Image (tube, one colour):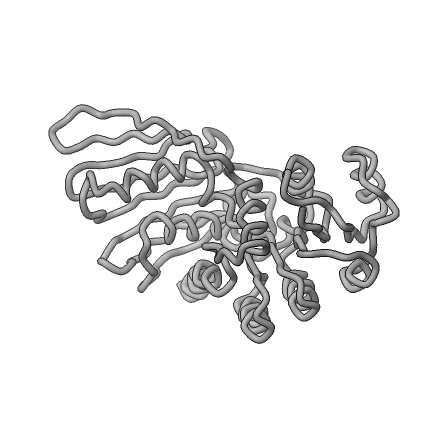
Length: 321
C-alpha cells in the first residue's frame, strides 16, 4: 500500500476521500485542510484520524512518511503546493487544471523536469466509460477519417465559492475537461482558435460563463464548441454531447450513450465498455502504478500543459474579439 497526503478534503476532496477509502492500493498518511469546520466534519464522516490533519503541506510532509501527494485545492494554490511536494521528492497527483495561469503551469512543469519527480493531472473525463466507448469507435477506423466535430455543453450549477468570482469560470475550470478529451479522442493538436465569450443577463457568475469557439486541429479537423455554465434548462451531461462527422458515417455521444451510423445503413447503439476502473479510481490506480512500477501516465504535467494551453489561447482570442 502506498501512503498519501491529501491536500484539501472539502469540495472535490470528497470524491478522492471515497476513492482512496475504497482502494486496495493506497491509504492515507495524513491530510492538509485550512478550514477547521471542514476538517472536523470530514473526519467524522469518513472516520479519519483528526490527529493527522495539518494546516500546511510542509508541516504534513515533516510529520508523516508519505509516498505521494494528492492536491485537491483551488487552482491558484497548485503551483506552490505542487512545487513543495516535487522538491521534497514526492510524486503529485493534482486536480485539474494544472494551474491557474500558463506561467504557473510552466513553473510546475519546470520543477517536475528539474527534480525528475512525477506530476500527474486528474483529467478524469478521459476515463469515463462513455468516453472510452467513443474512443474505441474512433480508434477502430470503421468510420474512416474524422472531418468535423461539434461539442455542446450546457449546465447551470450553483457552486458558490471561488468559481463565482473567476473571470472566465467555464473556460478555466470546466472546458479544460472537454479540451483535454478532444486531444485524447482525436490524437491531434490545435493549430488555430476563433471565438467569443459572453455572460447572459441572468448569470450568477461574475465572469463570462458562456462561450462559442471554433478550433482547427492538425489534419485538418474542425471542432465547434458551444458551452454555458448558466443554462436554465435541458442540461447536457457533464461529458457534453459530441458529434463526429467522418468519412464513412457519423458517431454521437449524447446522454452518455454512443450511437453510430455508417453511410447508407441504419443507426446502431454501441455497447458501453466496462473498464475495471473509471474516473478518480482509475486515476488513483494509474498514479499508484506509476509510483510502484514506473509506469508513465498519459496525463503527466508535461503533456497536460498542452491541454491547458488551449484554455489560455482561447482566453487570449476571446479577449481580443
